[in-house]
Each structure stands twice: as structure tokens, then as C-alpha cells.
Image (cartoon, rainbow, N blue to C red; front, side):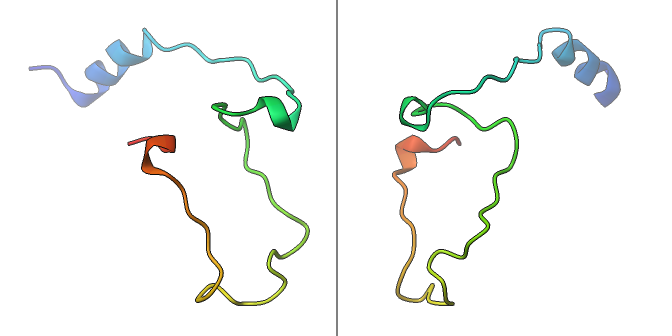
Length: 63
């Protein structure tokens, strides 16, 4: 058996960092953000999550 550190080193030997790129928003389907995005506006502009929410299809998420 190997240590966690040794296992992590072995895994990281096969990983490479992807370069980020800028894309028009309409061409970004299936892409992953390189950094977090924050809105300058509240949408909706009030606390209304009991009635307004967001839905995603599970096949569009990871895991």
C-alpha cells in the first residue's frame, strides 16, 4: 500500500493545466468557467426564492 501523498503524486503526474480562453457567451455551451463570476445586480431584485428559483437538468451537471 502507498501513502496518500504518493498516490496524489502519481495522479498529478497525469494531470495538466488547461489554458483559459475567451469565448462569446453564445458559444460557451459545455464549457467550464476559469474563475467565479459575480453579478453586480441581484436577480431577482428581492428575496423571493420561495417562488422564484432555478432548475437544471441533472445530465447537464457533473457527478
